[in-house]
Length: 288
Image (tube, rainbow, N blue to C red; front, side):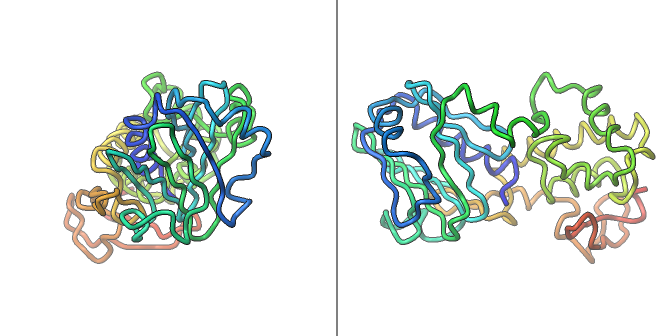
């Protein structure tokens, strides 16, 4: 599953290319679950509308239209969005569909624009989807009502961060970080990295963490995720761009996938354990 930085990489690429383009046609290929929309709605609210914005909420992409409808897109594990026109862009699961002839056998949905450009939604495993719905209804999706605040938003304060975690007092801190109802978009890589940066053992209960430690965790999480966005995500995740360039965050990782190597802070051996249902990387010497 992509994490916030990988999905934000997709959003930024499409936000530079899609706004102002008029949708002339949209059709699905062999996979109704990938585009579960009534034909009448597609004709009335998608065709001949213009893209007004490309947004993201947690790990979900939102393409807003001039019809006051929105394409809500979840890439799941193997989704790709590939734009082909005078300029090309794509990001997603790293296979030849990003750079090859499209549509291909992984293409599930095609959007054609008035200027001849196209947007392809590819998905090998068919778990992802593109849903058309009124923009005003998007916040009422069950997921949207439950998902926590965006950790990188300017108005998400340190006090709010601490308060949301305190509600999970008897949960271990890594599980709380991975809980999308606490904060949005944090996955395994960036949880391990931010906990290492804050010197916090991922197995500790939330109630054992001091305000000072939460201050460190808040700053580390934001720093780690901003760096990951800057680097286009991580090579560990299945996200690359249309030129086949992988996100380079893993070149800067301090602990994730570094088991049996020396901790860059204290020199002790980094270990990998099974915790919170995930492979978890930590230094037992300097994470307390």
